[in-house]
Image 1 (cartoon, rainbow, N blue to C red):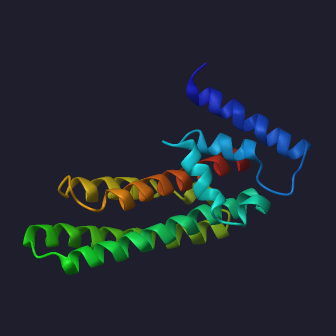
Image 2 (image 1 turned 90 degrees about the vertical axis):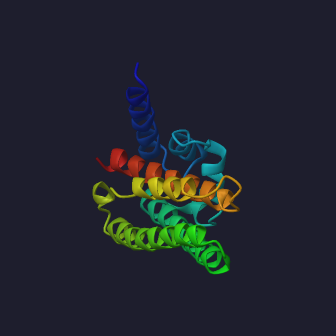
Length: 175
């Protein structure tokens, strides 16, 4: 059985169980099904559970939560790169940080669009979240290996993956 078939089977079983045995919120099984697809399941679950609404959320609210957390992380990264750019005396590094600032500005706009689509429950149209992952990689790859940005980049990558897989789960769930 391919991994896609397996994931689809698990998703169908989880959906069926959620319909047959409704709960007051997102179950650990649903979080596990979503987060097992990410680079780090435990971190994904911790990211989602960092919002107190997750425990009582339904799936549409979980989409909004994941996107709000992504927006918050993008805002923090943007602010950090602005500071790095302003504090850098190396012109090449200043330019690279500037490129990251521009990239994160673009990402902030895309996240706002995704949030609006999520509010309208148009999950299939939320298709630019993968670009957040590419941005974080390209920004970090343009920096020296001793750059102080690796931690915030990793957090952005994991938060992006979390939002991607939450919304992919909703596409499967709602068809």
